[in-house]
Length: 295
Image 1 (cartoon, rainbow, N blue to C red):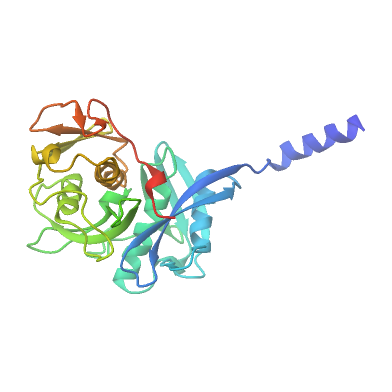
Image 2 (cartoon, one colour; image 1 turned 30 degrees about the horizontal axis):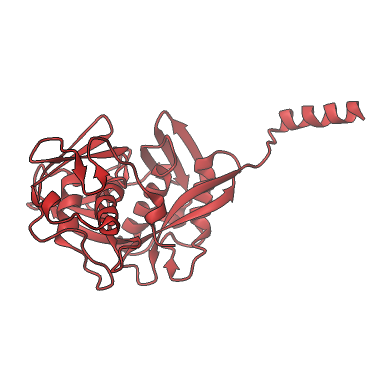
């Protein structure tokens, strides 16, 4: 009996078999009308690397009602290589088909899904072994993070697709809304995210977490920490209710956490560290709170 067990173990080592393990992956799809990016956290059995499992799960499509896949059916994963913090993903020809908007959303959902895997910061996409090219000018694309997907037209700013998280009307959860904005020259994407959050949602079933007088003064990311510098109204107008403090603070944190270079978020007021935002300490950095996502 022992000889049989030993033989099976040797066979597994030689053939590369390994036990499947439970894990969670974060997948990005769109709503049914392809107007908003929606997130699905799915429990999976890993086969190969967690990144490979996440990509294959994305290609399978959404499990929840009301969600839509944008990556064309028939798209196959051909190969994945991980080089440091960059992943090279090679897909079949079907991946890069459809309208320009469909192709942009396909790239966005794939890169966002890949960058949600721990350790992956950038992704280089290939189709049938050939590097993917820009939708604007046909130039070869390098490694991209979710914040790098932009289209630049002659004489204009960069068009940037943002994922913003706004509270529902009862301050019980955060829901995603996608918005394409034009960045001014030299404007950081992180700054644009906070600015657009303060403008408020487009969807009628979502609300802003902040007063109209709240303003962002600057945003800077250093060594993975995004420092968000707000005016005094951030403190005076938006505190006093624990539930609203929670969704307001995390609408910023979770939205900025869509950027691969952001690991945590610190808040400043008029350039200085203050003690409290209502019941929340502002002397520490905050990370994404996945429990607030609508499920």
